[in-house]
Length: 255
Image (cartoon, rainbow, N blue to C red; front, side, top):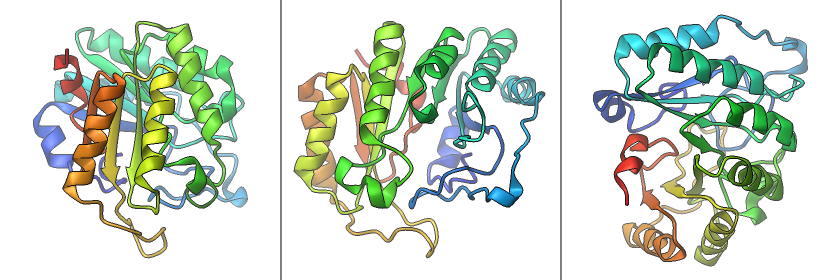
């Protein structure tokens, strides 16, 4: 996914022994305005799921000698469980071949199906991440198929069901949000028990995607970081090129 998402930090992460794998195919059933992953049309469905993918991901992670493995996916609203069982099997497969590595999952909202969230958590990830992406006011334009409160519910359930898991979320700025709206999102995330938050500048993947409304100055990123730390987050990574999995393995060094 580092390549398909056009991440600016790709080479840095690879050098540090961490990488993010995107499972459940290359086609998404949603069409968020910020994302470069292509959308699957009705004519393309059903989209097949590769039963060997969990073991293949684990094999590559072992071959690369990864110390921190991040697993994410496209959104699969066409699957009854949203792909939760596939996530769980991928976690278990990585554990079998890399018992010393940390496993982080970045999951979709599973349409609010908390039983699906439980399936993923039962597989024992070290980090459970679900991104709110933007402020509630911008959801109709940025994430039309998602719901802000549904994402908060996923995070709240994860915190209650798995108290020891490191809980993480992320949002982009530069889409037209106001600073006070970002602060309100940070308050909401802390209220539901999120430990770590990342904040990065939205960059338009192609001309077909949402335009950048503003390039946020470094001083504003620092203000967001300081505000988040005052709220009690374990760590706040905030900067123009920060992405949800950026410096993922360094969070464990935070007090």
